Length: 122
Image 1 (tube, rainbow, N blue to C red):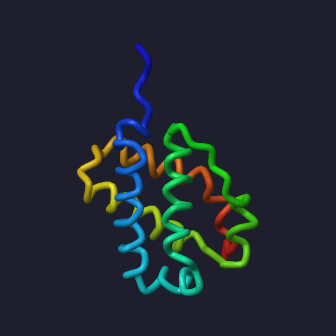
Image 2: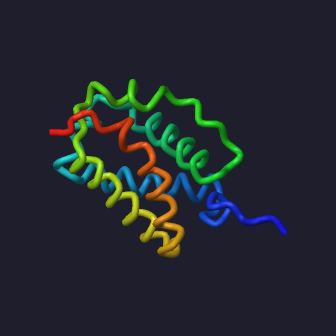
């Protein structure tokens, strides 16, 4: 019997897209994080994030986004910003009653990209 992927446990693409919508609603309501998205096409960003999360959770999706370090270098993201993103992601997953272990697994998958995204160690 094969192990069920995190992607499947989350409910697949549509469920991940719903989490992403909740996540960005939270991020855009956060005064600390909102400025990072002022000039961003949020429909495209939501689709991009859905693809990314589907890929890192073991879904049948290849992530075709820009290299993380190049895509985020100009944003001057620090560790506190990244922590806030992870908190909003965890909270969005919780809104959909994702079990704590799976929420932690998603946040851990995203944590693997911290060093590529954080450009301000100050």
